[in-house]
Image 1 (cartoon, helix red, strand yellow):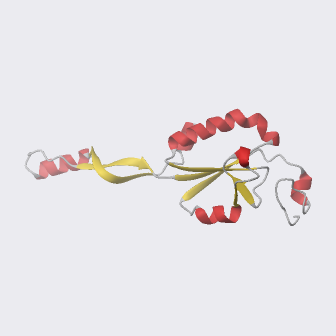
Image 2 (cartoon, rainbow, N blue to C red):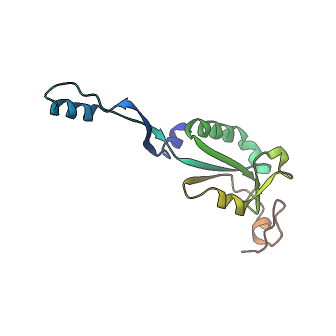
Image 3 (cartoon, one colour):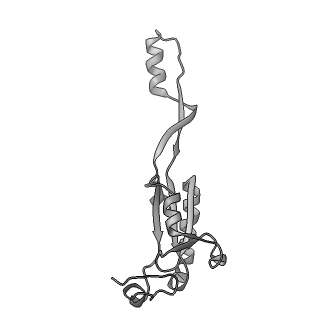
Amino acid sequence: MKRVLKRLRVLTREGREEELDIDRSIRKTSDNAGLLEIEMMPARRNNVKVLLLFDVGGSMDEHVETCEQLFSAARHEFKHLEFYYFHNCVYERLWKDNSRRMHDRTSTYRLLNTYNRDYKVIFVGDASMSPYELFYAGGSMAGKNFRAF
């Protein structure tokens, strides 16, 4: 999983100059008639921001171990990582703590307006739900799907 997540990286050089810039050091030294001139550059850092949205409960219960591995790898790989949970489909609310999902929820609208286009969004789910939930207004048990397709 770590290998796959590394493909999302965007490495940039920012901050203090703490790595040796060999090419510039050689060029400056040769321009200086052989007198050693050391040039430094900022270290490369992964500046990608990730928003992970996990489907939880029901048919996802059998995928808990895989989701734990993904979450662990993502926490290790990304400095800017946010995560939320949903059930079956992203409806009007998501939550941070699954045990408090009925009390501490965030509106989808607020979430979309909090995290800007700098964030890459990853949906994790198995897309296994009742057709009734998708095709009939009010068919969802987890949210309010107002219109059928």
